[in-house]
Image (cartoon, rainbow, N blue to C red; front, side):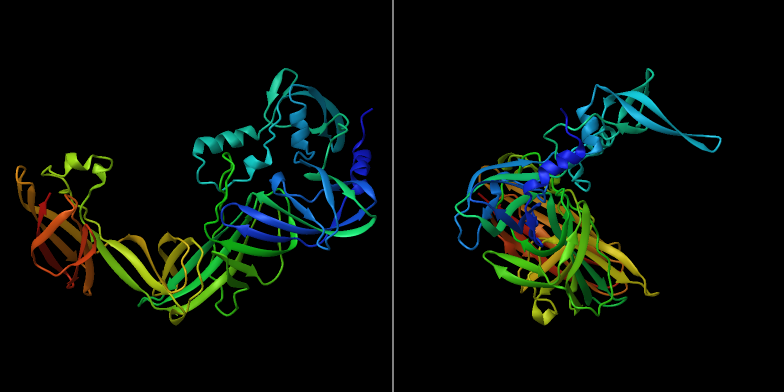
Length: 500
């Protein structure tokens, strides 16, 4: 005989463990470690314990249950179920079947209830792991559309299809093994009876965090005010109330399930600069650990943001880079085949890249290890409003390291790169090549532009003539730093001799 929902609840609640406030360590690789203290009222011998506060995406083989007092708590068997009863799941169970729907109609102001029979062609049920990645940038538009369509039920009523439920579904009685929450069940063997305050820990997917940094410059000048935000995204299938939260930053090696997608969401906004950041930081093993100073509640499918770093008056400067050679069309080509082609590297890129640079140091009003995240730059206009001026991402950055990111291309700076002479001797294995680099500044103030040249034809080279001094930045790259006057053009020339 089938059990009713009430009797199923009574069956499940006979040996459910009570629990205290949880603790979370969230990693920026889409997983978290959950720690909980659960109260077990054990009897001597065999005990069946149901724990109904587990996350939907728990990794069962990561579960650790122990008695911190050193008691001999022996786990004979562990089972995990993550298919709690819901309307969508029951519709899914009854796909292809005809069930009853209760429909309300309004006839002349009187509410009338009637029963409609409909066949469930498609339930529209979408498992939690498919809906837990709403911000996943790896989905393309077609995949997103498929997910949306799959979540729409199809019901056949009187030979016609409806893309909605015709009323409140009335399901048959629940199966005996139905559950209402993701449930861990243990068979425990205890040498003695009595209460035990057990520690529970496990790893769950579906939890992620990332950092965002908003940097605001004044109308004139390059000093920056920085506010860093932590954005936590809970897609675990479980809500954590008044949790103690830590955030682990670093590249921790973790084998991810092949079908699990990375979820990221949320944007920060600038706030008043007077309150102190409610996050502390410390080194932990090879990583950095950030601890929220107060407990927080993370509801399932909720995104929460907390400020974690703040700095004002950070000195910075703008760097202009002209990398004039367009080599992208040669990507994947055999170097031996293209290096002697006369037109190799002669296409010119006119854009001058804008980069913002500052140091993450205490003397620069920062000095906290910064986890990887997105930098958004703003500048105040003459009317005091902030205007967006570019963004980019940084990797994990220790203290006292330089941060340099590209934010776009300069509107009023133009570059031009023209190849002059080209001479070669295939038999004697040498090439001579000359270039003229033209840099034009349409601003009202002088600008330093760094012209970057890649000596790409061969490893052995020598610059035999040059108009300006250069810096060798690596084995095959040089950089000319030149100042261009307002509304003026400056030319840089050089000749390089290759041998092999």
